[in-house]
Figure 1 (tube, one colour):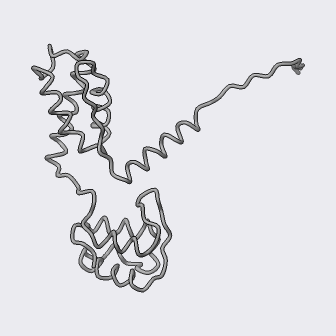
Figure 2 (spheres, rainbow, N blue to C red; figure 1 turned 135 degrees about the horizontal axis):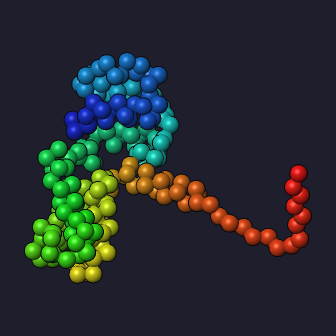
Figure 3 (cartoon, helix red, strand yellow; figure 1 turned 45 degrees about the vertical axis):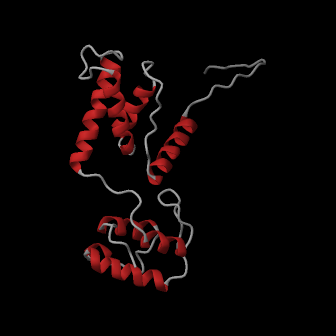
Length: 185
């Protein structure tokens, strides 16, 4: 049985990621309940799936069934929580970048307020502004605390892939010694 914490979008993503569209061609037109029932039937009838480790740490059909039977690991945050977290991150960025880690023009009065905001926002590590604010906060010499953004599996894999692509895209220079002849026409 598929856990109720998965949204219709989550179930559609799972169908698409694990290439189950052939078994359920009209899945986008179904509501969440119909989709859950039909996906459950499909998972009982098929023998194997195509794993996609970029999105889910699932290797086979049994792991997928187990994953879907439990509550969703990353619960989506509400828009209000997201807005509050982003505003706190922007305040930290302003404190770090524009105020030079001083309290003069920032909204903070002391370091404990900054650390409290840092502790609050580190739960929302999938948001790029949060990660940027935590990088600035970790560079602050006014405290010794370290803030590590909590990332979902999917975001961790995407960031690793991005880092790998960036590293491979950097140009390198090679030098050769010897005599060379150039001719211009």
